[in-house]
Image 1 (tube, helix red, strand yellow):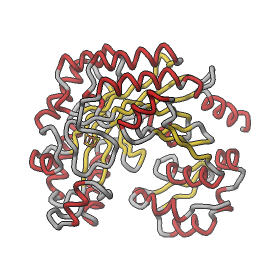
Image 2: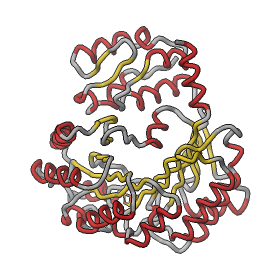
Image 3: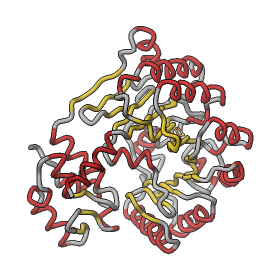
Length: 391
Ligand code: SF4
C-alpha cells in the first residue's frame, strides 16, 4: 500500500501548472473584485511584461516538472489579439516542458467570440473554453453591467462547438435579489441543453470596495439573496443529478469525468506558477503573489522584476488550506495521504468536530476519507474553519 501512495506522490511531483492573468476588461461587472483595468492604453506593454515574466521564471520549476495545465484567466483573456496570444504561447512552449495532452483553458466573454477568433484560439492550442455566461436574462445581465447579452452567449457556444471545441465550460451566477426560482430553473435547463461538458455556478456575493457594495450601502440596490440562494443551489444540484452530471466540487459540475484539471490541481496542492499582475504562485512551501496594479507591475518589471511578495506556509497553514479545499470536493480529505503529508491522524485530530458534523449529516466519515454531503457543501467554508488548527 505504501508503495502505491509513494507512486501517486511521485506522479504529483512531476505535475505542474501555469496561470496567466490578463488584467483587462471591457466593462466593470459591478460585483467583481478581481484585479483588472478598463483602460487598454497599456495592453501592449503589459503583454510584453507578461512574456518577460514567463521567460524569467523558468527556475520556478525543476527540470523534471512538466506543465500539465495552462489557464488564461483574468480579467478577460479574450480581449487579447490572436497575435498577442500566440506570442505568450510561444514563450511558454519555448521555455517550459508542456505535456502533449496538457489542458489549456481560456476564459472568455461571449461578445469577444466570433467564428474566426474561435478558429484562431483553436489554432493557438487552446483546447478548453471557459465562457462567462452568468445569466440568460438580458435585464439581469445589464443589471450586473455585463458586456454581453444572452443571444451572444448561446451563439458563441454553438460556434465554439462547431469549430471543434469539445471541452466547454460556462459560468453562471445565482442569488441575484430579483432572480426567481422559476427563472433560475429555466436558466439551468437552458445551460444543460448547450454543447458543454462542465458548468461552474457561483452565488452572488457582496465584496468590499465594489460598485455593488457601494450601491447597497446607498440603498440603491438590494443585497444578494440569502435563503433564496440556497434554494437556487438546491435546484441546480437536483437538475444536474437528474441529468447524470457529477457535482464534484461545491461550485463545479461536469459530464462524465470532465473535471477542470487546472482547478483540481489547486485543490490537490500541485505546484503552479502565476504570471501577471495579481497572479499567485505556489511551490508547496511558499505562496507568492504579484503586485495588483498594472502600472506598478510595468514599472517594477522595467526596473528589476521584483513585484512579487511571498509567505512561507506553516504546517497549520497547509492543513487549514487542505481542509478548505479538500472539503469542497467530493473526494474530501483522505486519511492516509493527510497522515503521510502532515504527520497527523485526521480522525484523532478532529474527532469531536467530525463526530458533530457526521451527527447532523453534513459530513460522511468513511474508512479512507471524510467528505461533505450535498447539504454540507452549502456550508463547506464554515465546516472547514471549525476544524482549523494551530499546531
Ligand atoms: S469580466 Fe470577469 S473579471 Fe472582468 S469585471 Fe466582469 S467578472 Fe470581473
